Image (tube, rainbow, N blue to C red; front, side, top):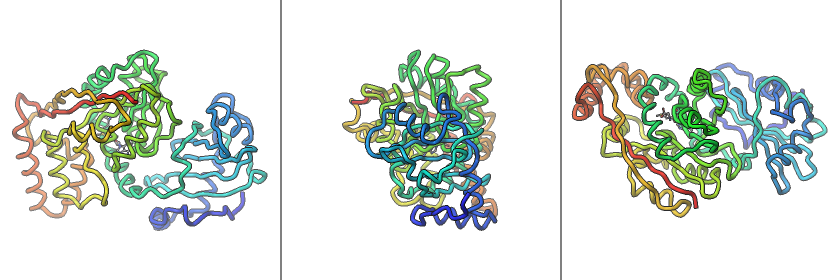
Length: 403
Ligand SMILES: C[S@@+](CC[C@H](N)C(=O)[O-])C[C@H]1O[C@@H](n2cnc3c(N)ncnc32)[C@H](O)[C@@H]1O
């Protein structure tokens, strides 16, 4: 493979490159490894050449226009193919990760005659989807925030014990039926997607955090479910074609996307006409909403323009955000009970397993007085919600039909 991959500097996230270089990673070698890593195309695309892959993409997804675009995903990288109307490959964009979780977005332009079959064929599982977000090569202004989120949520798995009952409530509230296609945004360990799959839905779980998706896959295996798939991705750039799902759900997941209007537009885009959106969120006036405020008050400010997650817990704000893309929403409420032997047991669990709280405590590790004050503040905040050995965490459910 050429050592001159024709990188376009404008597409390179230089902060990621800097971080990568400081770890001693040789970028071009890595790019070559990533790009030449063998991949497998699904079904009848498997074993065929690049022309047929692009043609089949067009055929399968009925993409029109001068450019066919397909997005491939594996646990290590994603690849987007662009071709013009005569199906010759114009360029391929590749995003991949190192073990440290850093994401690199590079682009190479290669006319089709130079593309090799091995560039897209082999033994890494690859899903091909048309992906409208891929049409834009602009750098995500919140890429750093999302990198931090990916790292922050990696320890969340034990908390899923407590979000599991809420998943049943959400699936029931969303009126998910046998045979429906369901997307669970911010699936974590897959509690909602798996509950939907057990109800007979064809469930796709999407999350920023690969470590949680590994647990989700294992959960699906234990539950003996074949009707699930798991994808790494971002609520603000969903890797699916328009009108793909009957239902889009999110349980305390999409609220972390920094731009609510982008997340809503994406969730609406991938819904079929008349499809449903349903999600669980934390009201600002109850415990978890107040905890978010407490963490925010004691942490460095988020990047400008990032909306605070608990805003999603106010029915008025939810209705405004769904706007004219959806019919008027229905609301319901519930309580997530969190068993704890004492407030300190609860706090210690949160410090170990819930990213925002974990980060807050880690940042004060070398300041004993501040650490003690934060811990006392947390327990004071939680005390009014603690009775019967349970912490009471009230949530809001929203359901709305796409117009
Ligand atoms: C509080 S956890 C909820 C997980 C799961 N839905 C549950 O109820 O157990 C929040 C999840 O949202 C994911 N997340 C955060 N930002 C995201 C984004 N922009 N796109 C997709 N997932 C995101 C995190 O990785 C994490 O898994």
